[in-house]
Image (cartoon, rainbow, N blue to C red; front, side, top):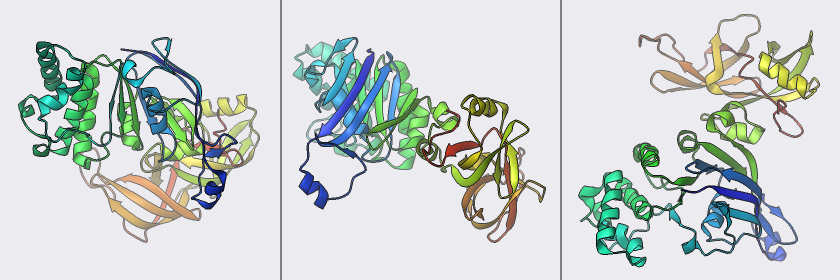
Length: 390
């Protein structure tokens, strides 16, 4: 059990500028010191909290985790574990365990010996090692595999063994670097559930790295959304989904991705509305309050609406019109790719009613009309890409 504080953490990798000019392009900031992989990251992590670092490849999330583990030096800033500054503390003395993307199991050792290995290195008594290994195996439901070699196990079972090896020491902090990315979709779903159950059974603070927003949304208490070394937003999964602070977070969190439109923010009779394809949609009261508090002026904006928040409607006044290019049937719903407003718009439309009876039929080339509520519209600045509500 541990609380952590990351205060203005920064990581810079020295580079040869001449080689950088000839090499591949990077969106990371380049200074006189070198390439900035992580820039000014600050967060207080509570005891037993589950933090998820999420972002595209190369955004700095794994580098951040490695700095917490002590596998990377911190260029600038301070890292505290339980109030103790640990910048110069060796990895073995931080009471942290790490689970990697690769299982990193010893092929010649059975499951029991793989899990017991860190305890044997610590020279614990044999009876204590046995107790800890069997407790961890019971938690992870792998007791029946203790005599097997890794090659005799499935991918999901191997990952459980890797997790078991990490938790036998009962570390203060458990770091997990994309542990499910090598598994197929079905096993990923199962292992996500296992990690949720594991979290309830061990008193440990979790820091989890992933580029998969489904994992982030289902596992994390809070997300740290990163891009090009910079923190974009720190929020609960629901808050990042409902109140993204900028265009990047809005597009990265949520599947399918949020739809973006070129629209106009207007103010009529003291009320804000967005105009799209000739339709004016008044924003919800809470959005009105936030925009007014920020003294937002009428302007051209990027409008964001999630596919699940778009509603099919009849040919009524205020409807937005389009034509179906692609219809992906997903069982009780269809993902419609609609050509509207000069771009491809994704709409999730229900194909069955509450009783399980067919209610809508869609096909390519079909003309459709749709709309959305003022409570689900997000308005972003064309210049800064920031959400104008915040």
